[in-house]
Image (cartoon, rainbow, N blue to C red; front, top):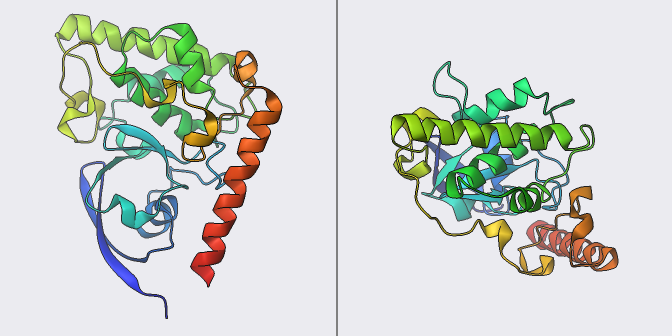
Length: 240
């Protein structure tokens, strides 16, 4: 019999006590054990970004983490973006600018965009495109997603200017309206670090937005295949 562990996941400010096997991924536990199905499962190789959540103020692929690794840590999912009936600016922007079609990739894009805008309120277009390129969308052609994120960034900066504070995840509570913080220089977003893709824990951006990437397509494909082989080895070991 496979051994199970008792863990506690703090998701959107609420604790979930879960008993799970060590081999199960964070996205599976979030969906199946916690009942939060807004986080989607796509490629399960860390490529598409549909499962993106914010773990301890950093966007991560929930399919590349074991649930036991997140024990006791604060997690934010798409269900925690709105503040009651008030949508987060990024959610409203996606609606206003039609930044979705089938909607399958949308939760991942929302969490990725929220994370980068909270960490870098004044992010430039080039860096923003670099971050969004780490997630894949098969429907929109990306243009409306880019428009939505730009609009959300402007709205969040406007809120900061009028209310004297900027939404940030410092309080750890659900709902953007409850976040506290001031507009100040912050560390670069992890997705902007000039690190070859094979060193990013298997997260290999392959979006068409990456056409100006310094890495050639063959190297991206090789890194993608390497990440997939590594994921298969983990699964085989867990079954054994």
